[in-house]
Length: 241
Length: 351
Image (tube, rainbow over all chains, first blue to last red; front, side, top):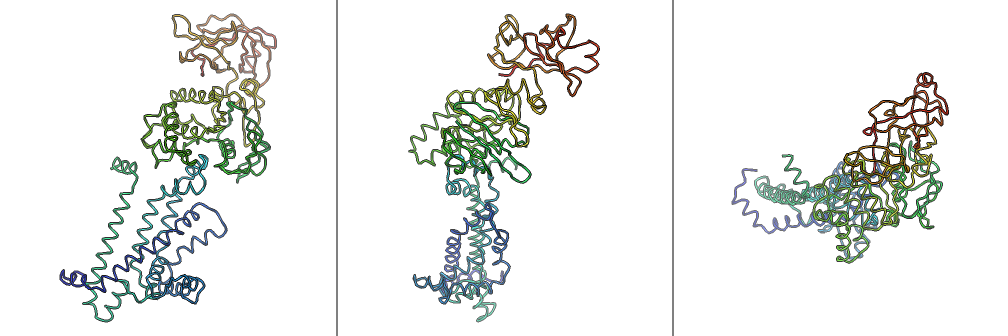
């Protein structure tokens, strides 16, 4: 990696295709993360708090996208989102196409990285004392008010951490994305193509650029999550130090 | 009136069996029992945090058995207080008011009024984890009281605070009760029950085994369990006054029957407790330094775990444990005259 020079990096960063692929990667991962967070966070709460038949099975199922080959996950998703399927066909009627489109890329990225959010959020919700939720109920709060005023704020740090991990993991996705949409190219697909077409020398600067940008976003988001630590916990940390 | 009728509740290895009691308007009701007897679960059932397998809970004739927790008019102060650590004291207290979409100025006025009454106004913009145990206890009370519950449920409210603070909190709870709030207070402390209760129920292994006034329940315990739970048979409701030129207090049981003791000078009314082990018996008038010397007649003498228990009527009724050897040696029997003596320092005064 160190063999890449600054002029090479600068030159690559000026390439319009590279710029577009990096923007697409960031935007698709962000969109996928935010879209799946909407059902994902309440699902994590249900998994943490409620008892229901096959709960353990569902918890195991959540991890499935992590353990199966991502190309296989892509093919499974393709069956789900293609125009021939119930969901894909229905969405196509509403004007939303997935295959070969940024929306499909966002879904592929989110599908394989969702376990990072679900597991972090589930642990966050599980660590909120049930007593506090009971106290809120006793103070006249409905279950949805308890969720938004007690459970969510207290589990927020874990949820934010999960969102960052989901976003970061989504950005790096290749296997599932390449099945759903080879074009438009995300940065990992472009890397793959440049490496295959032009060899290591040409692929290396873009690899360094993608790594640098991913690192910058990852560090920035981590810093943001640190700033969300409650003040009282910060004080305790200082005391302990 | 809050009524619990035939409540049964089973969870794993723990059962509440056929629980029946009622709490009148403005009544201070204490549920006394050892740890694990089912006291806290009973409060959770009333608050709707868990549901009974059978039976009914009603208030003023309205059935709340299946009502969700947020629709019940019962405010619960948890043993561990359960303050919202991510909110300031103000937001903790305002929490229930915000749920009812009251105007901000109305919420502010209610929170400030109550916090002044409970002497926590200066703490409103601090986080709960920066407060002392007593301050947290007051915040938890304020948070529950601000919603004006019809019945206040207290789960071991004095168990985690020191003796001085217990004194203050008792006064505070009495004040709340005097303002017309019915209270159900759960405790394992006999002294707490004695100090606070207008009516008391004893709970053992998920069963309520006796309900009545403190005098009814403790003076004539229905079972050895109640006698053991209290550990005291000699307690008297007293009016307290100062002995001139002395730090001694005079606790008047009935006109002319005084017990000398030491204690908080501020106590005007309360209970005087005398441990049986501190009572010395004598057939002849003893020449002792004890300040309390009562001459009376043995009205009852019956075998007990430690030998015999005798009851003496000396204007006040005293109960003393004796070994079988002592009973034989002094030839004690019903009707025998006897002196019962104890030091002023051996009397515990509870307000």
